[in-house]
Image 1 (tube, helix red, strand yellow):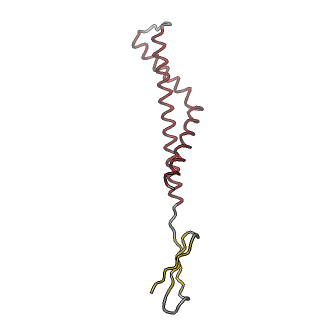
Image 2 (cartoon, rainbow, N blue to C red):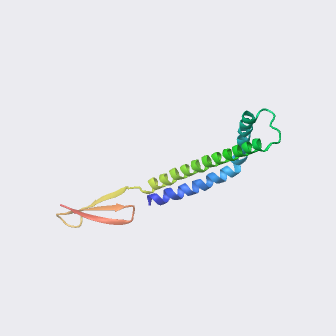
Image 3 (cartoon, rainbow, N blue to C red):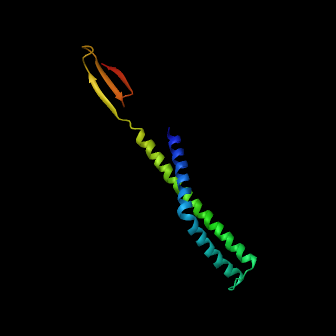
Length: 128
C-alpha cells in the first residue's frame, strides 16, 4: 500500500530525527538560544545585566525558543527523509514487468498468449 509505506517511513524518520536531536542538537541549540537571549536582554535592559529576574527570564525564554526550533527542524527533516524513503520503497516495489510468451501448440487455428506477472499468476488470452 502506498500510504502505509510513506506513513511508516515518516514515523521512523521522525523518531530518528528526535534521537539525532537529543544526541547532537540539544546543547548547541540551548547555547545559541542563550547567547541570543543575552544579546536581547542587554539590548532591552542595558549593558550590566546583574542578577535581576527579567533578564534571566528573557535569556531562558530564548534558550527554550532555540531548543524548540532546532527540535522542530530535526524532527521535520527526519520525517521528510523517512517519507521520501518510504515513497521510494513503494515505487521500487511496484515493478510492472511482464514476461510474455506465445504458445502456438494448443490448437492449429488459435495462438495462445501467456502473460506471467511476477510469477504470481498466469493469464491466457486467446488470440485469433
